[in-house]
Length: 395
Image 1 (tube, rainbow, N blue to C red):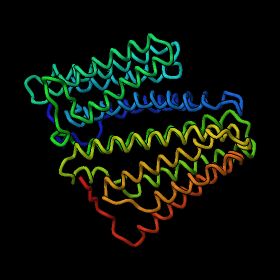
Image 2 (image 1 turned 180 degrees about the vertical axis):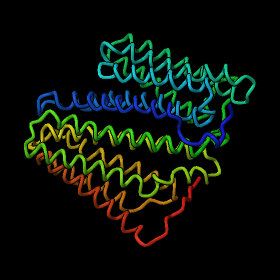
Image 3 (image 1 turned 30 degrees about the horizontal axis):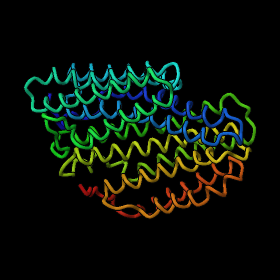
């Protein structure tokens, strides 16, 4: 079941797998909202920072499972029975992680850790068996050994109180990330070079595009769930309208035009796996930004006229800043350049952040929407009357 460009479009099973992450990302937003909104105004302080760090840790774990599964279906035949078993195991594990993550640093930590370890260990184990004498088999053995080793940290961490649990889980994720970056090195078994990995590049690019839509859909879902219980006052209605407008602008900025032709860029690259790995970091950054934006929606809809905590404004403005940073990186990956509107808009949002700490939440939400609107307008003006720009990746 070798990697091949014939893999084509994502399978229905992969799309079904993605639906789990709509739920999981809403749980990420709900967990962060608890840390930010349920503490009395003026008393959050360090709690918002530590809570945000723990929420990011859980988000990175979810992303690791999704990304590992997406790379598997892009390197091997996604219709092969064993690959579909891998996807189904990841689907169930991700659902368990989503259910457990709100209390992952309390009573449901073991459920979260076991689900994560099962997803990460089963993937290379099944491929190790299924590949037979395939050259990729040695890589899967190294991956299995690394995930089994870090899995011990996940399980032991789940048995410990919150602070040591955070330390062990962070250490495990860091080791796994470094293993990916350095070709899964294992003493005596060597390491591999990413540029030599065979992948169905356009299939992988499409998977990243689909995950972006999942994350964007989560922002709309959070806005709808926050507004639907009422009350339907002018402040709440305006905040809801700004949330919808911002989501539309985020979509527009992503697809114009780098996000739309990411697959073309991967296809043109001399080493598709290298741009694929870079795009993974880019989409993770944008996903963090979208998640922060969704939390900002919820805070604004629930407290439209409240003078916010600093952490609240960071969500409303910082989410779009991270999205723009990721989008700028995506533009570089596709075109080998970055439009000035990206970094100018990010700098504007950062510059007004201290000022908006003393204004109602609605003002901050409106400023974010206006700045993103300016970026979308700049993109439209640049593209008007010109032929569609072709991909020119730097890899």
